[in-house]
Image (tube, rainbow, N blue to C red):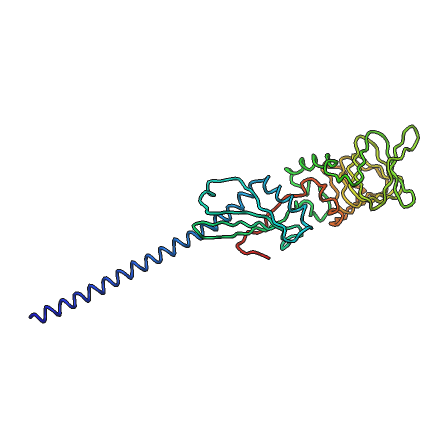
Length: 317
């Protein structure tokens, strides 16, 4: 009888041990899964914070625009160009151990492309997210070479009008700037140079001479501009009204705010033609030319307008 009771005790201990082992295994496994689950949540949260930094920057127009202008103006100087960006403080940033956001060059997706790198540390988990995009406003990539009410969004038209009315503020002082105030002005050919002159009391008063490929900005204000000969110029023509007695070629940008008066002669634009006042586009031949646009890109309103193409955890070198 005593042997039977001893055997029963042993069996009971073995069974209890097995139960304890099973319970411990379940608890241990559950704890491991809980730890893994919590860790995965922390990784997801870190990635969320990193993406949020990019969204905060995209909403901070001034910070993004200032950084984009800096990057654009120094684009050709260094391949390793990178700038840290100060962004507005938000409550979510208080939960981070560390965060940083920077912008650098990247032509992976665009000629004047950028890469934004958002780095955070959250509960000792480090996470990087990258955003890739372009610095250049899409309107300046319009392959028709024409900016008008059909190719430009309504909200940008007034800003562009204001910008093109103040081009002299953007013009490089090393280049020629001519402001045509009230009066009658002519451009004619004289050898290998062009001459711009004003007619006063039947006398021709020379304003300036310029070569075909010499950068010049002609800004017309309440005056008449008449093209006497087959002339070519390089630069920006900001005009209210143009009279063509011969063909006229502009390598660059023409902003037309009025009419072109011509029987059969044409204005040919190699670059960009801007027509934001619904002027007639008769007698105008436009050929989009990225090279001539790029010569004057720093003088163009709304030229810098960063846009993101892609957000990824992958760093495209």
